Length: 358
Length: 243
Image 1 (cartoon, chains in turn blue, red):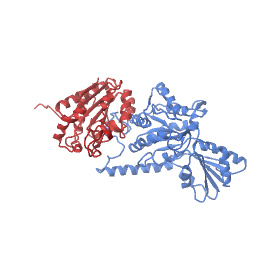
Image 2: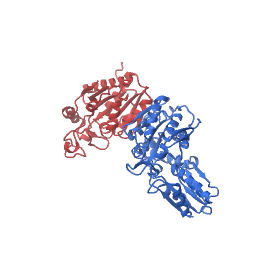
Image 3: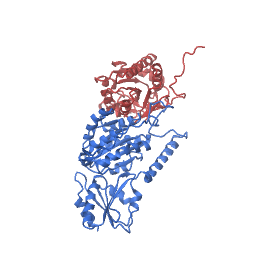
Image 4: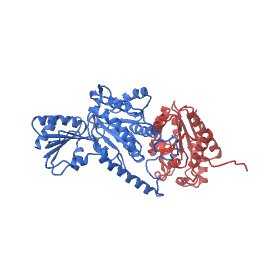
């Protein structure tokens, strides 16, 4: 871990990727991601890696898939509209069990939306990676420090499970300057033996590395596909036990819970502190992995202890709220405080919304 | 007895699933023969696109990887930049390469990526049942141009090789045909030249190969060859366009 230095969120995160052994980046400029792409345009060359300014996000994610199939740790970064274009290939990467890390520096809204930070891509990355219903892991850091700390893990897990890993930050986190201790440099791993890596000629011909698992023990292609997808589902279900990450803040004696993730959680923490100063027993529950979602941890919150809860997000219509509601005990009233993005959620508004439920 | 011919070792030891009269099989065989002649059996890697062309990846004894429809040149870019010593063959049909993948195709060509694109042009979407492609000829009947392709609505045939030859970066751009023995020999020579450029680190090469699709043209293989001679090669003249 290096000494703390002040860095812009996007740049620190890209430097963390380099230190994590990433040696290929392809990206297409989109606000608020551009500073990430600009940084790696020179940094990758400096470290002996490859940088390609792609013709589109669609091309960028395919370059990442191609780089992964060469055995190189590879990365792209984008924002909502770009992620929409990438979903085709995220689906292919899940199906083909091809790793890669995708940073989505969220902006708000549908369509072009707005360039300020938002959290309205929650459903898009937690329900299915493109068509077909397969998913990878989704990390949602709260700060630049947490994002750089998660970057090594993102690559490791992407390769361990052979799935794409999405990291969600947002426009405000990306532009914010704050003190950060960057992770140590690690050497890029040797992935040449991996089944998804082509052209390494170590042992056998890897004919037809393909996104749909047609070939297997059965002469019937549909059987092979079904078996592979059953195994995929079992893998995803196991993540509920092994890969869930979350933070609890002042939850020990809490009678009220605020649920929030990413930037909203950072603001919500201030609201919790304010309410605590007023003598209200409020805690914060913050999922760090949105996929797997901390389902059982939320379900375990007791109605005998928790009187009410509030879900906070920068998304209108609400998305995260419904996910929390799905798992929270039905006898605990759950409120929703949300802004559409473009506007930050405010700690005094969060505190007011929570107090209204007391 | 002297052995004068044998099945190329890079071809899998089973029959292809291409239709009778289709020339994909010839193209795949030529790629394998050239790879053997150049001694690149251990470094050749193929890209499997979407469409009939995808099948080639299952018929060859070297590593091949799949890509989404149209994205071959982008995926190939990410691969080849990191494995510069492998010889990368991006094998695509005309719909994949010149319609849904036009953007990726042209930009990879313009960046001068050091790989070879081989585009099989049979003027229709084969695997999906013979719909019109950007390459479909004026008046040609397909399942989506049942009265014959109307260029007022669907545009003129897209001569992709000429388009790519107009860019300053590509090193070698050619169109060859697989419907005559002379054409097959010239096609093999073209593939060899393209691979040699790539092996020397010379940059991007594009080889368009005209093929018949008797199944979707609703012709016998024999009539399809005649049609290629009399009609197709008039729209798509054969020969080197650049380099």
